[in-house]
Length: 209
Image (tube, rainbow, N blue to C red; front, side, top):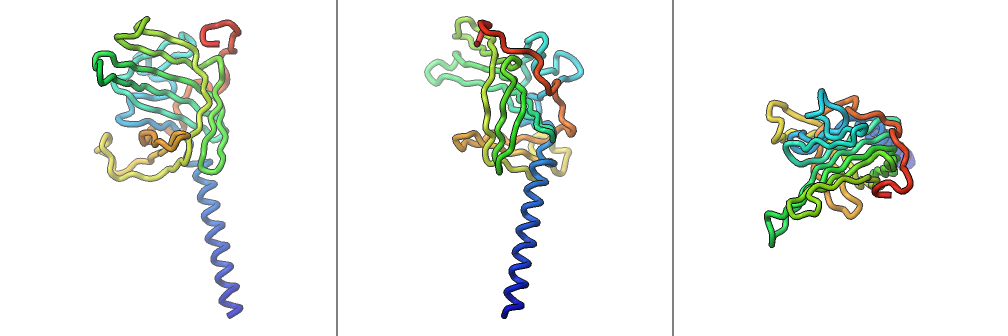
């Protein structure tokens, strides 16, 4: 009986150690890369030209993608970049839709299965567009701490947007309130990112400060 108990304890310890190593590997290795939802129209980083670069931080200029979506990039040494294009419509006034483009980058830390993202204050931007807005296009500085909760990385074999592939890595994150974000596919590794260091400093009295 004692031998059986000792063997059981050793097995439990080995299983627990293996799971801990798997979790550690997930955080350090599997998170690295550029992830994008849907067909990948929204991407962080710099493309081959202005037409496929979501946001140019030097010119402070957005390029509206073909479709809405989310994109996040992460490095192993603690940097992140985010690009989002979303829109909302009004049930009472369908023509009065509002679209927003957001971009920011900075550093992140991991706590269990949660990601805490802290952006550089002077670099991020948000552009809001709407037919019924005044003005119809408005751009401002953007800096908002984010929490990606209950993150998981897994292999998906049921791929709608990339039917030519048998499987792809998927990043699933949840907002702080538990709402799931669209699942994002791994498109680049190493990640496609703008410079990971702060580009500008926040200026007191500038728009959005």
